[in-house]
Length: 396
Image 1: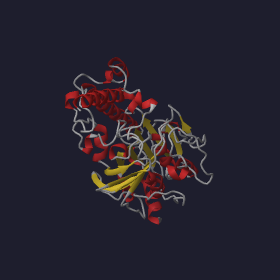
Image 2: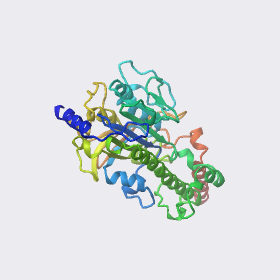
Image 3: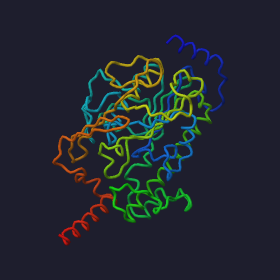
Image 4: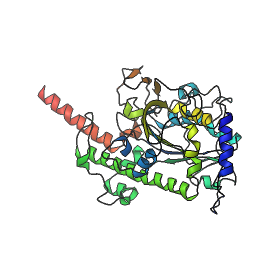
């Protein structure tokens, strides 16, 4: 710990003066930037997906660390986010049911609360969705929230969440999709449906292929948004003072992924970039591809550990960067109620195997759900199921 503070003292002493951008360029403590997207698994170029065009994310990984075994604690957003912001499993908080509103114990304080106590300016642009509400978490949480709004002299913890890849964005007719997102890509840049590599559990139809092609188009657009945030960081002279996390809130927003505890539902892309001046906090060489297992429950204690802040006893994760790190052999995930669809499933995952226990085996894997069943892909899968059932009945 003593060497940690000596390093920061020397960094501050040797740093250059700030540019006239209205922001502080150098801080004694490292800034923290979390860039998140929604509803994608490892469909990123640097993970080897041949259909993904993600040069900005790939470049971040080239100078940072790419985790091959990073997992959300839930296959839907709000339970996962409640864990991210507290460092406590949703099943311990009581926040495991999607679209709920719980009161969490007073002694559990969120990561932004703790960082604000340590002098950090904490901004969130803009999604919260924790299954509990607390208006005191952030200094600013809105569409306009930005590290640029902080008082002079403060380090920051800023979160930017892009909904571009959310499952809902691929739906709608061709005209609607084009007006919302498609226009941002040229004809040459758009993913070709015939190039899609479908998993065997999806019906191979023109509609299914078109929807997956839209998904990859959205990933490409999201990558540009990530690049814009990183460009702003560099324009403000803050790249060398800022630790960057990039990740998705859970796996793919498709049937047999979202709401399910397969890897397609909980495995996420996760990249960390740490500037050279904070290399003592990094357990890996830049450009490393690691198979170490990490979980969302580890994120909050890892940030605190990196900053030399005592990790509260109630946090249930293991710090994987900084001093006294603890490596995992397994990660855990849970799936519970989503809207009107009830299920109780638990999973433990290692590097080689996954074990999923379903406590309501009499219910189907994909239960009826009003919101999801309106989507084009569910309509298509249900249509093709009817055709298959009809063929089976006629042949029997």
